[in-house]
Length: 275
Ligand SMILES: [Zn+2]
Image 1 (cartoon, rainbow, N blue to C red):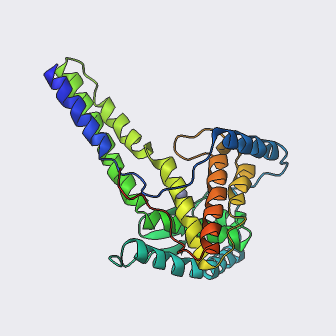
Image 2: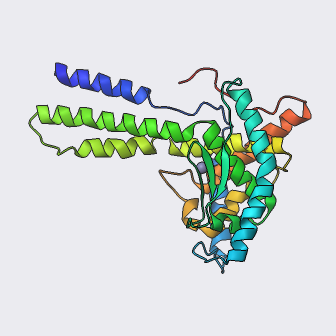
Image 3: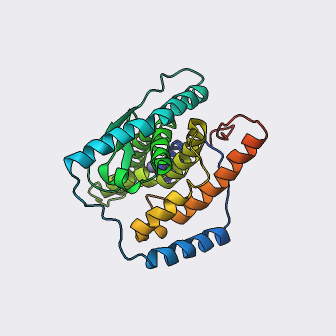
């Protein structure tokens, strides 16, 4: 019993050590969420020609994507660096490279802690410069908020937690074959992923506002994504649902406009204490 208690206590401490987002974002009700989900479902059901994320692009199209990315990214990059320096109190260089990956497949973009990587299908999908600027700002926000590093740390912590269960079970005469270590690793990776996505939307909107792009219609991006891939209207453990993202961004737009009207600094709300 004593050994088990010891392991349980260790497990609690390990969970507490997981890295959490630090922004203080707007809240929304369940009623708002279900109304938005219904709206997106109705719109997605009515779509006849869904976006083709496996389309092959010509060399000319690829060249045009690269040039457009470069032009649209420039003001976003400048605003991201400024906000990053502000949040890190000038302790970091805050330079992240925007890269166009011509051979990447899928309607996606990603951030790896050093770069922002844009895929051709996303360039094709984000037809307005405002939409594209939002996607770039969202990826910058992942890097600024150190989500790629935190995800790695969470993976490590999750795996450690699993190892504790494996050891406890083996001590109790059960051979788990290391199963829990594997489960722990994937749980760690998943634990705060939806929160990180919301946080990247939130900080991304502030970057967008500071780069001079209009923010009013940015929440519509997730409605358009629902038309392209309707499954993301519903439950997901790795990403927040599109309706939840739309509502949170709507409320963030209100928050930013409120600050603008009162001449307050356009900085994301940060939690005073890390949980
Ligand atoms: Zn993201």
